[in-house]
Image (cartoon, rainbow, N blue to C red):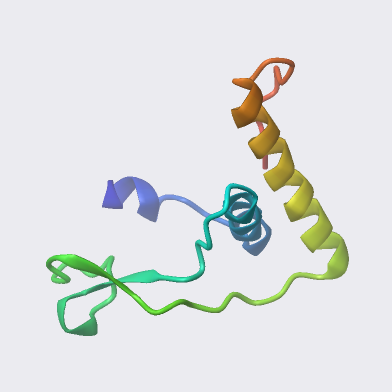
Length: 93
């Protein structure tokens, strides 16, 4: 799983899309982040068990980009609520 995640190139707008989606379903995804034992980064090879820690901060988007991220989150939310009905395109990026 770590190898798959390492190959991802996620933009800040995509991250904010998931933050907005989390808010739409009532989850504050920014409230916690994962750390390994001794405070090591969760993705470090020697992190060991992973624990939830305090929240984190993301850089802000421009108003236009934030609106796009919010709309993308709403699209994903609507698709999940309808089971994908009427949403033939699954490309949310």
